[in-house]
Image (cartoon, rainbow, N blue to C red; front, side):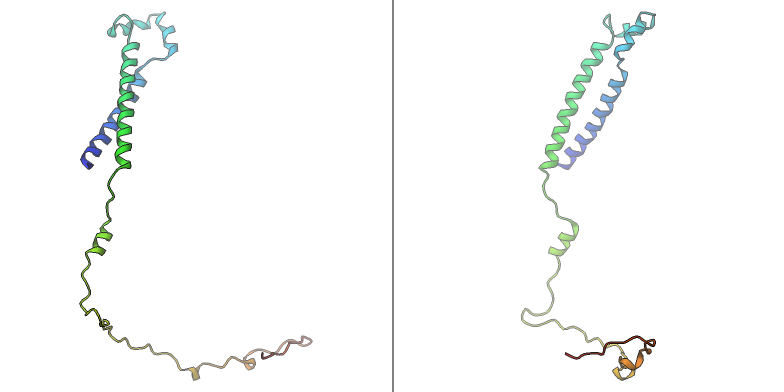
Length: 144
């Protein structure tokens, strides 16, 4: 399925490039005025009518093929089967733990870090605060 998708994507790119080239090859409506002054001699390669009908028909066919191919790619992209990621596959294939079903796994003991004792830290109280400036009244702490 992915090979067909890649082939259709490559074909879509080629059809788009060919369609752009054909549109750029065609001359516009104003180019017919130049034929009166002798520049229309190159149109006789495709016949008496010129290249307009041939290029127009080829553009229509390429446009139809491009739209059909694009619709096929859209259908294939919408109905692509779901794939699991590599991580999901690894999680489902992970080996079972080696401990018994009813017992807890043994975790190695980790020593506690050395923390400073509580006595070494200064007590937070009013003794550590600087005195308020003169004339400022500080409300007293109320214990609830």
